[in-house]
Image (cartoon, rainbow over all chains, first blue to last red; front, side):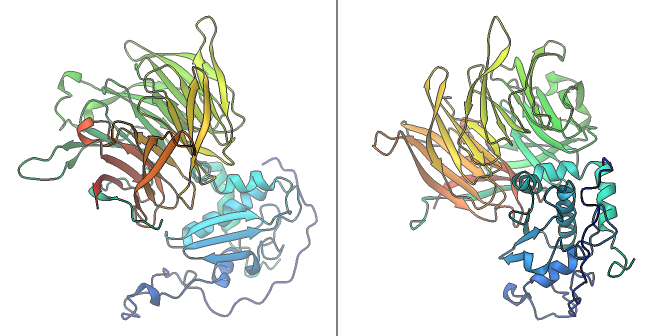
Length: 175
Length: 355
Protein backbone atom coordinates (compact mmCIF):
# COMPACT_ATOMS: atom_id res chain seq x y z
CA UNK A 1 0.00 0.00 0.00
CA UNK A 2 1.25 3.45 -0.85
CA UNK A 3 -0.21 5.25 2.13
CA UNK A 4 -2.13 7.51 -0.19
CA UNK A 5 -5.60 8.30 1.13
CA UNK A 6 -8.11 8.18 -1.70
CA UNK A 7 -11.00 9.63 0.28
CA UNK A 8 -9.80 11.55 3.33
CA UNK A 9 -13.20 12.49 4.65
CA UNK A 10 -15.90 9.99 3.80
CA UNK A 11 -19.52 10.38 4.78
CA UNK A 12 -20.42 8.00 7.56
CA UNK A 13 -24.05 6.94 7.57
CA UNK A 14 -26.19 5.67 10.43
CA UNK A 15 -26.57 1.94 10.40
CA UNK A 16 -29.81 0.36 9.40
CA UNK A 17 -31.33 -1.88 11.95
CA UNK A 18 -29.81 -5.27 11.85
CA UNK A 19 -32.14 -7.84 10.43
CA UNK A 20 -33.67 -9.68 13.34
CA UNK A 21 -33.33 -13.10 11.80
CA UNK A 22 -29.98 -14.61 12.62
CA UNK A 23 -28.26 -15.88 9.53
CA UNK A 24 -27.54 -19.59 9.53
CA UNK A 25 -24.03 -18.84 8.40
CA UNK A 26 -23.44 -16.53 11.31
CA UNK A 27 -24.79 -19.17 13.65
CA UNK A 28 -21.97 -21.34 12.39
CA UNK A 29 -24.15 -23.75 10.49
CA UNK A 30 -23.98 -24.65 6.90
CA UNK A 31 -26.83 -23.82 4.64
CA UNK A 32 -27.51 -27.50 4.44
CA UNK A 33 -29.92 -27.87 7.26
CA UNK A 34 -28.59 -29.65 10.30
CA UNK A 35 -29.72 -33.24 9.95
CA UNK A 36 -30.13 -33.86 13.67
CA UNK A 37 -32.41 -30.90 14.21
CA UNK A 38 -34.57 -31.34 11.19
CA UNK A 39 -34.37 -34.91 10.01
CA UNK A 40 -37.31 -34.57 7.67
CA UNK A 41 -35.76 -31.99 5.39
CA UNK A 42 -34.14 -34.12 2.79
CA UNK A 43 -35.62 -32.88 -0.42
CA UNK A 44 -33.68 -30.09 -2.07
CA UNK A 45 -36.85 -28.05 -2.48
CA UNK A 46 -37.18 -27.90 1.30
CA UNK A 47 -33.94 -26.01 1.73
CA UNK A 48 -34.70 -22.49 2.79
CA UNK A 49 -33.58 -20.20 0.02
CA UNK A 50 -30.94 -17.67 0.80
CA UNK A 51 -31.96 -14.01 0.66
CA UNK A 52 -30.41 -10.58 0.28
CA UNK A 53 -30.43 -9.89 4.01
CA UNK A 54 -28.44 -13.00 4.81
CA UNK A 55 -25.79 -12.07 2.29
CA UNK A 56 -25.80 -8.49 3.53
CA UNK A 57 -25.33 -9.69 7.10
CA UNK A 58 -22.20 -11.49 5.98
CA UNK A 59 -20.55 -8.50 4.35
CA UNK A 60 -21.87 -5.43 6.23
CA UNK A 61 -19.23 -5.59 8.97
CA UNK A 62 -16.22 -5.86 6.65
CA UNK A 63 -13.86 -2.99 7.45
CA UNK A 64 -13.02 -0.34 4.91
CA UNK A 65 -9.29 -0.61 4.13
CA UNK A 66 -8.59 3.06 4.81
CA UNK A 67 -11.15 4.14 7.40
CA UNK A 68 -12.18 2.88 10.83
CA UNK A 69 -15.65 2.19 9.47
CA UNK A 70 -17.54 -0.75 8.12
CA UNK A 71 -18.58 -1.04 4.50
CA UNK A 72 -22.16 -0.60 5.67
CA UNK A 73 -21.40 2.65 7.48
CA UNK A 74 -19.86 4.08 4.35
CA UNK A 75 -22.73 2.70 2.25
CA UNK A 76 -20.29 0.82 0.11
CA UNK A 77 -22.57 -2.20 0.47
CA UNK A 78 -26.30 -2.48 1.03
CA UNK A 79 -28.95 -5.20 0.82
CA UNK A 80 -30.45 -3.50 -2.23
CA UNK A 81 -27.22 -4.00 -4.12
CA UNK A 82 -27.39 -7.78 -3.77
CA UNK A 83 -29.14 -9.97 -6.30
CA UNK A 84 -29.87 -13.63 -5.72
CA UNK A 85 -30.44 -16.12 -8.51
CA UNK A 86 -30.43 -19.88 -8.64
CA UNK A 87 -27.14 -20.80 -6.98
CA UNK A 88 -25.89 -17.42 -8.08
CA UNK A 89 -25.17 -14.25 -6.14
CA UNK A 90 -24.35 -10.86 -7.57
CA UNK A 91 -22.96 -8.27 -5.18
CA UNK A 92 -22.56 -4.69 -6.31
CA UNK A 93 -20.66 -2.24 -4.19
CA UNK A 94 -20.26 1.51 -4.39
CA UNK A 95 -16.79 2.95 -3.81
CA UNK A 96 -16.94 6.16 -1.76
CA UNK A 97 -15.10 8.07 -4.49
CA UNK A 98 -14.79 7.26 -8.21
CA UNK A 99 -10.99 7.16 -8.07
CA UNK A 100 -10.90 4.85 -5.06
CA UNK A 101 -7.72 2.81 -5.36
CA UNK A 102 -8.96 0.41 -2.71
CA UNK A 103 -11.86 -0.89 -4.78
CA UNK A 104 -10.13 -4.10 -5.78
CA UNK A 105 -9.23 -4.81 -2.17
CA UNK A 106 -12.81 -4.12 -1.03
CA UNK A 107 -14.21 -6.37 -3.74
CA UNK A 108 -11.72 -9.08 -2.89
CA UNK A 109 -12.63 -8.94 0.80
CA UNK A 110 -16.32 -9.33 -0.11
CA UNK A 111 -15.45 -12.30 -2.32
CA UNK A 112 -13.33 -13.97 0.36
CA UNK A 113 -15.97 -13.48 3.04
CA UNK A 114 -18.62 -15.08 0.81
CA UNK A 115 -16.24 -17.83 -0.32
CA UNK A 116 -15.57 -18.78 3.30
CA UNK A 117 -19.19 -18.59 4.41
CA UNK A 118 -21.31 -19.95 1.60
CA UNK A 119 -21.68 -23.50 0.33
CA UNK A 120 -19.59 -24.21 -2.77
CA UNK A 121 -22.60 -24.41 -5.05
CA UNK A 122 -22.97 -20.64 -5.14
CA UNK A 123 -21.27 -18.87 -8.02
CA UNK A 124 -20.50 -15.32 -6.95
CA UNK A 125 -20.06 -12.28 -9.18
CA UNK A 126 -18.85 -9.03 -7.69
CA UNK A 127 -18.80 -5.66 -9.39
CA UNK A 128 -18.78 -1.97 -8.64
CA UNK A 129 -22.04 -0.12 -9.10
CA UNK A 130 -22.22 1.03 -12.72
CA UNK A 131 -20.91 4.57 -13.02
CA UNK A 132 -19.38 4.63 -9.55
CA UNK A 133 -15.76 4.10 -10.49
CA UNK A 134 -13.49 5.50 -13.16
CA UNK A 135 -11.92 2.09 -13.81
CA UNK A 136 -15.14 0.16 -13.52
CA UNK A 137 -14.43 -2.42 -16.21
CA UNK A 138 -10.89 -3.08 -15.06
CA UNK A 139 -11.94 -3.52 -11.44
CA UNK A 140 -14.82 -5.82 -12.38
CA UNK A 141 -12.65 -7.90 -14.67
CA UNK A 142 -10.02 -8.43 -12.03
CA UNK A 143 -12.50 -9.31 -9.28
CA UNK A 144 -14.12 -11.98 -11.41
CA UNK A 145 -10.99 -13.59 -12.84
CA UNK A 146 -10.65 -16.72 -10.72
CA UNK A 147 -7.02 -17.22 -11.62
CA UNK A 148 -6.07 -13.73 -10.47
CA UNK A 149 -8.13 -14.16 -7.31
CA UNK A 150 -6.46 -17.52 -6.61
CA UNK A 151 -3.01 -16.01 -7.10
CA UNK A 152 -3.86 -13.00 -4.93
CA UNK A 153 -4.87 -15.35 -2.13
CA UNK A 154 -1.42 -16.95 -2.24
CA UNK A 155 0.18 -13.55 -1.67
CA UNK A 156 0.92 -13.40 2.07
CA UNK A 157 1.10 -9.59 2.26
CA UNK A 158 -2.21 -9.14 0.51
CA UNK A 159 -3.87 -11.83 2.61
CA UNK A 160 -2.63 -10.04 5.74
CA UNK A 161 -4.32 -6.84 4.62
CA UNK A 162 -7.45 -8.77 3.69
CA UNK A 163 -7.69 -10.45 7.08
CA UNK A 164 -7.63 -7.02 8.74
CA UNK A 165 -10.60 -5.95 6.62
CA UNK A 166 -12.40 -9.13 7.53
CA UNK A 167 -12.08 -8.56 11.27
CA UNK A 168 -15.39 -6.99 12.18
CA UNK A 169 -15.33 -3.27 12.92
CA UNK A 170 -16.37 -3.56 16.57
CA UNK A 171 -20.02 -4.14 17.24
CA UNK A 172 -21.73 -1.84 14.77
CA UNK A 173 -18.45 -0.05 14.26
CA UNK A 174 -18.54 1.95 17.48
CA UNK A 175 -15.68 4.43 17.64
CA UNK B 1 -31.42 -27.55 -28.06
CA UNK B 2 -34.69 -29.04 -29.23
CA UNK B 3 -33.14 -32.29 -30.36
CA UNK B 4 -31.23 -34.49 -27.97
CA UNK B 5 -27.59 -34.79 -28.91
CA UNK B 6 -26.77 -38.14 -30.54
CA UNK B 7 -24.11 -39.06 -28.00
CA UNK B 8 -23.67 -38.88 -24.27
CA UNK B 9 -20.73 -38.77 -21.92
CA UNK B 10 -19.94 -41.85 -19.93
CA UNK B 11 -17.79 -41.51 -16.82
CA UNK B 12 -14.78 -43.81 -17.14
CA UNK B 13 -12.87 -42.82 -14.01
CA UNK B 14 -13.31 -40.53 -11.01
CA UNK B 15 -9.81 -39.84 -9.72
CA UNK B 16 -9.73 -38.16 -6.33
CA UNK B 17 -6.64 -37.21 -4.43
CA UNK B 18 -5.79 -33.55 -4.84
CA UNK B 19 -6.40 -31.61 -1.63
CA UNK B 20 -7.27 -28.45 -3.49
CA UNK B 21 -8.49 -27.21 -6.85
CA UNK B 22 -7.15 -29.20 -9.80
CA UNK B 23 -6.08 -26.82 -12.57
CA UNK B 24 -5.00 -28.91 -15.50
CA UNK B 25 -4.79 -32.42 -16.95
CA UNK B 26 -2.24 -33.59 -19.53
CA UNK B 27 -1.97 -36.93 -21.33
CA UNK B 28 1.45 -38.35 -21.98
CA UNK B 29 1.77 -38.48 -25.78
CA UNK B 30 3.63 -41.81 -25.79
CA UNK B 31 2.92 -43.75 -22.62
CA UNK B 32 -0.41 -44.58 -21.05
CA UNK B 33 -0.09 -41.89 -18.37
CA UNK B 34 -2.33 -39.02 -17.32
CA UNK B 35 -0.99 -36.16 -15.19
CA UNK B 36 -2.85 -33.53 -13.20
CA UNK B 37 -1.68 -30.47 -11.27
CA UNK B 38 -3.26 -28.58 -8.44
CA UNK B 39 -3.28 -25.68 -6.01
CA UNK B 40 -2.03 -28.28 -3.51
CA UNK B 41 1.35 -27.90 -5.33
CA UNK B 42 1.49 -31.54 -6.38
CA UNK B 43 1.31 -33.41 -9.67
CA UNK B 44 -0.52 -36.73 -9.67
CA UNK B 45 0.14 -39.44 -12.23
CA UNK B 46 -2.24 -42.15 -13.33
CA UNK B 47 -1.63 -45.07 -15.64
CA UNK B 48 -4.39 -46.70 -17.64
CA UNK B 49 -4.99 -50.01 -19.34
CA UNK B 50 -7.18 -50.89 -22.27
CA UNK B 51 -10.21 -53.06 -21.61
CA UNK B 52 -9.39 -56.75 -21.28
CA UNK B 53 -11.29 -59.91 -20.44
CA UNK B 54 -11.71 -59.04 -16.81
CA UNK B 55 -12.81 -55.48 -17.32
CA UNK B 56 -14.74 -53.84 -20.13
CA UNK B 57 -13.71 -50.23 -19.53
CA UNK B 58 -10.36 -48.50 -19.46
CA UNK B 59 -8.95 -48.89 -15.95
CA UNK B 60 -7.00 -46.06 -14.28
CA UNK B 61 -4.70 -46.38 -11.32
CA UNK B 62 -2.70 -43.83 -9.36
CA UNK B 63 0.99 -44.51 -9.87
CA UNK B 64 2.68 -41.56 -8.27
CA UNK B 65 2.57 -38.09 -6.82
CA UNK B 66 5.25 -35.49 -7.38
CA UNK B 67 5.23 -33.00 -4.47
CA UNK B 68 7.07 -30.60 -6.88
CA UNK B 69 8.52 -28.25 -4.28
CA UNK B 70 6.86 -25.28 -5.99
CA UNK B 71 5.97 -22.82 -3.24
CA UNK B 72 2.62 -21.93 -4.78
CA UNK B 73 -0.11 -23.43 -6.97
CA UNK B 74 1.01 -25.59 -9.88
CA UNK B 75 -1.12 -23.99 -12.57
CA UNK B 76 -0.01 -25.79 -15.69
CA UNK B 77 1.63 -28.99 -16.89
CA UNK B 78 2.86 -30.16 -20.28
CA UNK B 79 4.57 -33.32 -21.54
CA UNK B 80 7.41 -33.17 -24.02
CA UNK B 81 6.60 -35.08 -27.24
CA UNK B 82 9.06 -37.79 -26.18
CA UNK B 83 6.87 -38.51 -23.19
CA UNK B 84 9.98 -38.57 -21.01
CA UNK B 85 9.87 -35.02 -19.68
CA UNK B 86 7.19 -33.06 -17.85
CA UNK B 87 7.13 -29.28 -17.38
CA UNK B 88 5.26 -27.58 -14.52
CA UNK B 89 4.37 -23.88 -14.44
CA UNK B 90 3.63 -22.40 -11.03
CA UNK B 91 2.21 -19.28 -9.42
CA UNK B 92 5.62 -19.08 -7.72
CA UNK B 93 6.70 -17.82 -11.21
CA UNK B 94 9.07 -20.74 -11.87
CA UNK B 95 8.94 -23.61 -14.31
CA UNK B 96 10.02 -27.07 -13.20
CA UNK B 97 11.38 -29.65 -15.63
CA UNK B 98 10.88 -33.22 -14.46
CA UNK B 99 12.44 -36.44 -15.64
CA UNK B 100 12.57 -39.94 -14.34
CA UNK B 101 15.85 -40.91 -12.76
CA UNK B 102 16.11 -44.05 -14.81
CA UNK B 103 14.38 -43.50 -18.12
CA UNK B 104 15.04 -47.08 -19.29
CA UNK B 105 12.67 -48.18 -16.57
CA UNK B 106 9.91 -45.95 -17.74
CA UNK B 107 7.89 -48.54 -19.61
CA UNK B 108 6.91 -49.85 -16.24
CA UNK B 109 3.87 -47.71 -15.51
CA UNK B 110 3.98 -48.68 -11.86
CA UNK B 111 7.03 -46.50 -11.31
CA UNK B 112 7.65 -45.13 -7.86
CA UNK B 113 7.21 -41.55 -6.76
CA UNK B 114 10.89 -41.04 -6.17
CA UNK B 115 11.58 -41.73 -9.82
CA UNK B 116 10.63 -38.21 -10.87
CA UNK B 117 13.16 -35.55 -10.12
CA UNK B 118 13.41 -31.88 -10.94
CA UNK B 119 16.28 -31.67 -13.43
CA UNK B 120 15.98 -27.94 -14.08
CA UNK B 121 14.19 -24.97 -12.60
CA UNK B 122 13.59 -22.19 -15.12
CA UNK B 123 13.47 -18.76 -13.57
CA UNK B 124 12.74 -15.53 -15.37
CA UNK B 125 9.07 -14.68 -15.11
CA UNK B 126 8.35 -11.93 -12.62
CA UNK B 127 4.92 -13.17 -11.57
CA UNK B 128 2.70 -16.26 -11.81
CA UNK B 129 3.39 -18.62 -14.68
CA UNK B 130 0.06 -19.58 -16.18
CA UNK B 131 0.77 -21.94 -19.02
CA UNK B 132 3.58 -24.08 -20.44
CA UNK B 133 3.84 -25.98 -23.72
CA UNK B 134 6.34 -27.94 -25.83
CA UNK B 135 6.57 -27.50 -29.59
CA UNK B 136 5.74 -30.52 -31.75
CA UNK B 137 9.42 -31.34 -32.26
CA UNK B 138 10.15 -30.98 -28.56
CA UNK B 139 13.01 -28.59 -29.22
CA UNK B 140 11.20 -25.54 -27.88
CA UNK B 141 9.29 -24.77 -24.70
CA UNK B 142 6.99 -21.76 -24.36
CA UNK B 143 5.88 -20.26 -21.04
CA UNK B 144 3.69 -17.29 -20.17
CA UNK B 145 2.84 -15.24 -17.13
CA UNK B 146 0.85 -12.47 -15.51
CA UNK B 147 3.96 -10.38 -16.18
CA UNK B 148 2.52 -10.05 -19.75
CA UNK B 149 5.40 -11.90 -21.38
CA UNK B 150 5.79 -15.10 -23.37
CA UNK B 151 9.19 -16.79 -23.15
CA UNK B 152 10.54 -19.19 -25.72
CA UNK B 153 13.18 -21.61 -24.47
CA UNK B 154 15.37 -23.86 -26.55
CA UNK B 155 15.57 -27.37 -25.12
CA UNK B 156 19.20 -28.47 -25.15
CA UNK B 157 20.83 -31.74 -24.15
CA UNK B 158 21.30 -32.57 -20.48
CA UNK B 159 18.26 -30.64 -19.31
CA UNK B 160 19.81 -27.36 -20.37
CA UNK B 161 17.57 -24.55 -21.57
CA UNK B 162 18.40 -21.33 -23.36
CA UNK B 163 16.00 -18.42 -23.60
CA UNK B 164 15.48 -17.63 -27.29
CA UNK B 165 13.16 -14.71 -26.85
CA UNK B 166 10.94 -12.76 -24.49
CA UNK B 167 7.84 -11.61 -26.31
CA UNK B 168 6.21 -8.56 -24.83
CA UNK B 169 3.26 -8.17 -27.15
CA UNK B 170 0.30 -8.47 -24.81
CA UNK B 171 -0.85 -5.55 -22.70
CA UNK B 172 -2.13 -7.82 -19.90
CA UNK B 173 -1.66 -11.30 -18.35
CA UNK B 174 -0.97 -14.07 -20.82
CA UNK B 175 -3.29 -16.94 -19.97
CA UNK B 176 -2.33 -19.66 -22.41
CA UNK B 177 0.33 -20.74 -24.91
CA UNK B 178 -0.27 -23.37 -27.60
CA UNK B 179 2.08 -24.65 -30.30
CA UNK B 180 0.92 -25.56 -33.78
CA UNK B 181 0.74 -29.39 -34.08
CA UNK B 182 3.47 -29.63 -36.74
CA UNK B 183 5.02 -26.21 -37.47
CA UNK B 184 7.00 -23.85 -35.29
CA UNK B 185 4.15 -21.41 -34.83
CA UNK B 186 3.18 -20.34 -31.34
CA UNK B 187 -0.16 -18.88 -30.27
CA UNK B 188 -0.84 -17.04 -27.01
CA UNK B 189 -4.11 -15.90 -25.42
CA UNK B 190 -4.52 -13.07 -22.98
CA UNK B 191 -6.53 -11.12 -20.46
CA UNK B 192 -6.22 -8.30 -23.00
CA UNK B 193 -8.88 -10.17 -25.08
CA UNK B 194 -6.53 -10.94 -27.96
CA UNK B 195 -4.68 -13.91 -29.43
CA UNK B 196 -1.21 -13.47 -30.89
CA UNK B 197 0.74 -15.71 -33.24
CA UNK B 198 4.53 -15.84 -33.42
CA UNK B 199 7.22 -17.31 -35.63
CA UNK B 200 10.98 -17.29 -35.67
CA UNK B 201 12.66 -15.02 -38.14
CA UNK B 202 15.84 -16.96 -39.01
CA UNK B 203 17.90 -13.79 -39.27
CA UNK B 204 16.30 -12.06 -36.33
CA UNK B 205 14.33 -13.14 -33.29
CA UNK B 206 10.92 -14.51 -32.56
CA UNK B 207 8.25 -12.00 -33.43
CA UNK B 208 4.49 -11.59 -33.46
CA UNK B 209 3.16 -11.75 -37.02
CA UNK B 210 -0.55 -11.68 -36.30
CA UNK B 211 -3.04 -10.48 -33.69
CA UNK B 212 -6.49 -12.03 -33.66
CA UNK B 213 -9.08 -9.68 -32.16
CA UNK B 214 -12.76 -10.29 -31.72
CA UNK B 215 -13.28 -11.77 -28.29
CA UNK B 216 -14.89 -9.28 -25.94
CA UNK B 217 -13.18 -10.50 -22.79
CA UNK B 218 -10.28 -12.63 -21.53
CA UNK B 219 -9.24 -15.43 -23.87
CA UNK B 220 -8.63 -18.37 -21.54
CA UNK B 221 -7.65 -21.24 -23.75
CA UNK B 222 -6.50 -22.24 -27.24
CA UNK B 223 -6.63 -25.46 -29.25
CA UNK B 224 -5.26 -26.17 -32.71
CA UNK B 225 -7.18 -28.54 -34.95
CA UNK B 226 -5.37 -31.89 -35.25
CA UNK B 227 -4.02 -31.03 -38.71
CA UNK B 228 -3.31 -27.44 -37.79
CA UNK B 229 -5.34 -25.49 -40.32
CA UNK B 230 -7.69 -24.12 -37.66
CA UNK B 231 -7.27 -22.55 -34.24
CA UNK B 232 -10.05 -22.51 -31.65
CA UNK B 233 -10.24 -20.12 -28.70
CA UNK B 234 -12.48 -19.98 -25.64
CA UNK B 235 -13.25 -16.88 -23.66
CA UNK B 236 -14.80 -15.19 -20.67
CA UNK B 237 -17.19 -13.61 -23.21
CA UNK B 238 -18.94 -17.04 -23.25
CA UNK B 239 -18.05 -17.73 -26.87
CA UNK B 240 -15.78 -20.08 -28.73
CA UNK B 241 -14.21 -18.76 -31.89
CA UNK B 242 -12.68 -20.79 -34.68
CA UNK B 243 -10.04 -19.16 -36.88
CA UNK B 244 -9.08 -20.59 -40.25
CA UNK B 245 -5.71 -20.44 -41.90
CA UNK B 246 -6.29 -18.80 -45.26
CA UNK B 247 -2.67 -18.11 -46.12
CA UNK B 248 0.71 -19.05 -44.70
CA UNK B 249 0.61 -16.23 -42.17
CA UNK B 250 -3.05 -15.31 -42.19
CA UNK B 251 -5.87 -16.64 -40.06
CA UNK B 252 -9.48 -15.47 -40.30
CA UNK B 253 -12.42 -15.78 -37.96
CA UNK B 254 -14.88 -18.26 -39.47
CA UNK B 255 -17.21 -19.59 -36.77
CA UNK B 256 -18.57 -18.63 -33.36
CA UNK B 257 -20.03 -21.20 -30.98
CA UNK B 258 -22.02 -20.62 -27.82
CA UNK B 259 -23.30 -22.99 -25.19
CA UNK B 260 -21.83 -21.98 -21.85
CA UNK B 261 -23.25 -19.72 -19.16
CA UNK B 262 -19.97 -18.82 -17.44
CA UNK B 263 -16.31 -18.35 -18.44
CA UNK B 264 -15.07 -21.04 -20.83
CA UNK B 265 -11.80 -21.99 -19.18
CA UNK B 266 -10.63 -24.76 -21.43
CA UNK B 267 -10.90 -26.08 -24.95
CA UNK B 268 -9.41 -29.19 -26.55
CA UNK B 269 -9.52 -30.41 -30.15
CA UNK B 270 -9.11 -34.13 -30.75
CA UNK B 271 -9.25 -36.38 -33.78
CA UNK B 272 -12.46 -37.96 -32.52
CA UNK B 273 -14.24 -40.76 -34.29
CA UNK B 274 -14.87 -38.42 -37.15
CA UNK B 275 -15.72 -39.23 -40.71
CA UNK B 276 -13.15 -38.58 -43.39
CA UNK B 277 -14.38 -35.06 -44.11
CA UNK B 278 -14.49 -34.27 -40.41
CA UNK B 279 -12.02 -32.01 -38.63
CA UNK B 280 -12.39 -33.86 -35.36
CA UNK B 281 -14.12 -33.27 -32.07
CA UNK B 282 -13.92 -30.09 -30.06
CA UNK B 283 -14.71 -30.07 -26.37
CA UNK B 284 -15.17 -27.09 -24.06
CA UNK B 285 -15.74 -26.58 -20.37
CA UNK B 286 -15.74 -23.84 -17.77
CA UNK B 287 -17.19 -22.08 -14.78
CA UNK B 288 -20.67 -23.40 -15.44
CA UNK B 289 -19.51 -26.97 -14.80
CA UNK B 290 -20.71 -28.04 -18.21
CA UNK B 291 -18.91 -30.08 -20.85
CA UNK B 292 -19.85 -29.68 -24.51
CA UNK B 293 -18.55 -31.88 -27.32
CA UNK B 294 -18.85 -30.65 -30.92
CA UNK B 295 -18.16 -32.34 -34.19
CA UNK B 296 -16.50 -29.90 -36.56
CA UNK B 297 -16.79 -30.41 -40.31
CA UNK B 298 -15.86 -28.41 -43.34
CA UNK B 299 -19.09 -27.49 -45.05
CA UNK B 300 -19.36 -26.17 -48.57
CA UNK B 301 -22.62 -24.44 -47.63
CA UNK B 302 -23.22 -20.73 -48.03
CA UNK B 303 -23.38 -20.21 -44.26
CA UNK B 304 -19.65 -20.45 -43.90
CA UNK B 305 -16.70 -22.74 -44.36
CA UNK B 306 -17.32 -24.69 -41.14
CA UNK B 307 -20.18 -26.49 -39.49
CA UNK B 308 -20.40 -27.54 -35.85
CA UNK B 309 -22.79 -30.09 -34.48
CA UNK B 310 -23.26 -30.57 -30.74
CA UNK B 311 -22.56 -34.26 -30.15
CA UNK B 312 -22.95 -34.37 -26.39
CA UNK B 313 -23.47 -32.06 -23.46
CA UNK B 314 -23.37 -32.70 -19.73
CA UNK B 315 -24.05 -30.25 -16.91
CA UNK B 316 -22.77 -30.60 -13.36
CA UNK B 317 -19.96 -32.82 -14.60
CA UNK B 318 -17.96 -32.06 -11.43
CA UNK B 319 -21.04 -31.64 -9.25
CA UNK B 320 -21.28 -27.92 -8.38
CA UNK B 321 -17.65 -27.15 -9.19
CA UNK B 322 -16.08 -25.13 -11.94
CA UNK B 323 -14.16 -27.22 -14.47
CA UNK B 324 -10.75 -25.77 -15.29
CA UNK B 325 -9.33 -28.09 -17.89
CA UNK B 326 -10.34 -30.52 -20.58
CA UNK B 327 -8.03 -32.60 -22.77
CA UNK B 328 -8.57 -35.33 -25.36
CA UNK B 329 -6.57 -38.51 -25.05
CA UNK B 330 -3.99 -38.41 -27.88
CA UNK B 331 -3.98 -42.18 -28.48
CA UNK B 332 -5.83 -43.16 -31.66
CA UNK B 333 -7.33 -46.22 -29.96
CA UNK B 334 -8.87 -43.94 -27.32
CA UNK B 335 -9.84 -41.03 -29.54
CA UNK B 336 -13.27 -40.84 -27.89
CA UNK B 337 -11.84 -40.36 -24.39
CA UNK B 338 -10.96 -37.14 -22.59
CA UNK B 339 -10.13 -35.96 -19.07
CA UNK B 340 -11.30 -32.99 -17.00
CA UNK B 341 -10.03 -31.29 -13.82
CA UNK B 342 -12.20 -29.30 -11.44
CA UNK B 343 -12.33 -27.00 -8.44
CA UNK B 344 -13.37 -30.08 -6.45
CA UNK B 345 -9.79 -31.36 -6.83
CA UNK B 346 -11.08 -34.29 -8.84
CA UNK B 347 -9.85 -35.53 -12.21
CA UNK B 348 -12.46 -37.31 -14.29
CA UNK B 349 -12.13 -39.33 -17.45
CA UNK B 350 -15.02 -39.48 -19.90
CA UNK B 351 -15.92 -41.35 -23.05
CA UNK B 352 -18.25 -40.17 -25.79
CA UNK B 353 -20.73 -43.00 -26.42
CA UNK B 354 -23.90 -43.36 -28.50
CA UNK B 355 -27.17 -42.56 -26.75
